[in-house]
Length: 250
Length: 250
DNA sequence: CCTGTTTATCGTCAGGCAGACGACTATGAT
DNA sequence: ATCATAGTCGTCTGCCTGACGATAAACAGG
Image (tube, rainbow over all chains, first blue to last red; front, side):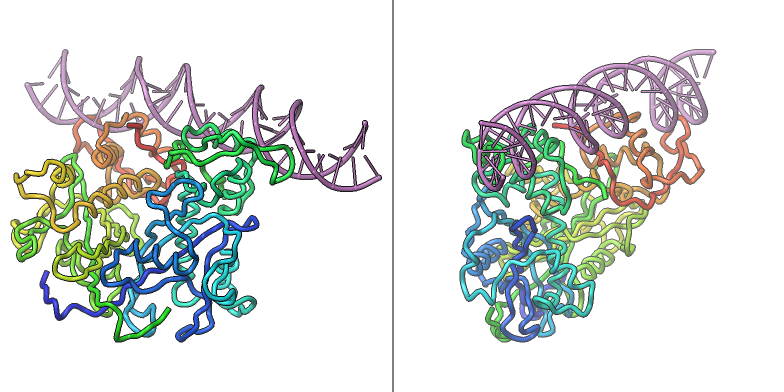
C-alpha cells in the first residue's frame, strides 16, 4: 500500500440527493434544472461538492437545507422527521465529462410539503413523479416536461426508489412520509404510492395496528379524508417491523 | 451549483475491502498488517487508492486480486464464485490523520481458501475471526494477537458483517461461502457461523430444499463430514429467497 | 329525513409456513 | 456388534396472511 501524499489521483467528491415524498397518491422526487453545461437545461438530482472539513452526511444535510429548507432530525424515525441515509456511491470514470467525480448519493424521505419548495424560482426546483422520471429512459425520444435526467442520475434515482420500496417492508420508515399525526388510511396510501399497488384496507389495518411499537394512538380523530372519522396516530419507537410487511407478489 | 474545476476541494478516494469467509465454524475477515505510519504494525482492512481511469468496483476487484489472488466472477451468485458488492462510503474529515480520504468500502464473500492467502509473507496477511476483531474495541486494553484495527476499520467491518448477516436471510448468497459442490449440512454450518446461532438441521433441510432454484442436486454424495452420506448440491439460479430464511429471535 | 357514497374498523375462515421434535437411515470408529 | 455421527423424512401446532363479509360513522344530494 504505497502512499505518496503529493501523488494521489485527483478526485472531486460530491453528494447527490434522492429526495422522495408522496404527493397526490404518487411517489415524487425532487429535481433541479441545471443552469450551466454540461446537460444545461436538463433536470438533475440536487447535490454539490463536499466541503474540506465536512462529513458526508453533513454535506448531504446542508445541500438538502439549501435546496429545500428541510432540516434533518438527528436519529429520526419520528413521523414528521425527515429521514436521511446514505444510499450508494457512483464513481464511473466518465460519469462526468468535466473531470473525475465520485458522488456519494443519499436518500431522503420527507412528508409532503404544502409550501412549494423554497429557494430559487419555481422554474429551477420541482417535484416530479418518479414514474415519469424513470420511464423517460425507456422511450428514447421523450421531451414532454423535460428530457431524461442528467449524468447517471436516472440510475441513482432508480436505486433510491428501490431502496425506499424495500425498506418500508421491514422498517417503520413509511411514517417519514407522513405528517406528525396521520391515520391508518393515510399510511396505507403511502405504501400504495411507493409500491404502486393496491392494498386491502382491512388486512393493512390489522397488520399495522397489531405490530407493537409501530403506531401510537394520539386520541384524536379526523375526517379530512372523508367518510367515517379515523383515529390519529403518531409513529411509535419501533424502527424494525417483525415480521415484515411484504409487498404483494408480482 | 457553482463549478470551478480548479477550485474543488482536494480529496483522495480509496477502496477498502471487507473480505469474509467461514473457517472452522467461525466467520473470519481478511486483515493486513500495516507496514508504515500511521497505525504502523496494526492490522487493517485491505485496500488502496482508486486509479484515475478505474471504476470503483474495478478498483475493489483489483485490490482483492492483488491481496489474495481471488478473482471476482462477473454476475456471480454461483457457488464457488466470489461475490463482491459495494458496502458503504466513509468520509469523516479526520478519519485519516494524513489527509482527507473518502473510502468506498466493498464487501466480498468467498469460500474457505485451502491455500494460505498468497502474496507477501504470512506475517502481513491473515484471516482473523470477526468476533475477536469486533470485540477488541470493547475491552480497551487489548493486545493479544494484535490490537484494534486501524482507522475506522472496526466500524466498516461491523457494517460489512451486519450486511452479510442480513443478506443471507433473503438472498441465496450464503452459497458464496461454499465450495462449488456442497451438502445441506455444510450450508447450514455457514448460516450458523455467520449468525452465531444453532439451527435445527431438519427444519433447515426442509427450508433450503423446498425453496425453488436455491439448490440443484448434482447427483453425487459425500461423507467428508462423517456420518451418513449426504447429497451434493450446486447453487441454483435463484438470487432471492421468498419467503426469506429468518434468523431466530434474540 | 332518507338514501347513496365514502372511509374506517371488526370478524371469520382457510392455507401456508415455521418451530419443536420423533423416527429412521447410512456411514465410520471401537 | 455396538456406538456415535450426520442426514433425511414426517407430524403436529400455532402464527400470520390473503380473501372477503359485515357494521359504523361521516357527508352529499334529493
